[in-house]
Length: 66
Image (tube, rainbow, N blue to C red; front, side):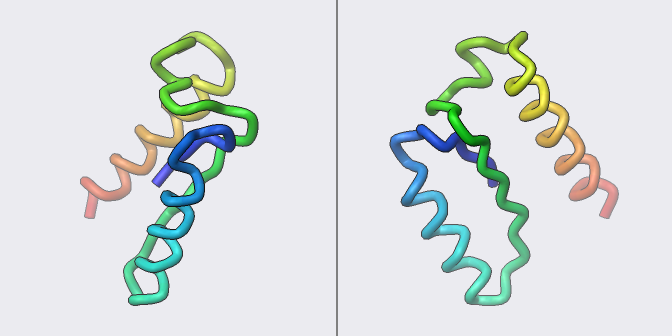
């Protein structure tokens, strides 16, 4: 899970990740400080959005590789 520090759903996302972890479900949670909801689509060339994309792609590679 990834969320921005200024995302309107930040607290809910953190709570959801914590509840999943409390149930023993593995969660990779990353908070991007200073980022609003949808920042990766609003300014896709920004360095923070690029880091988001790299992290997202790497997470998918790990999951799909099994």
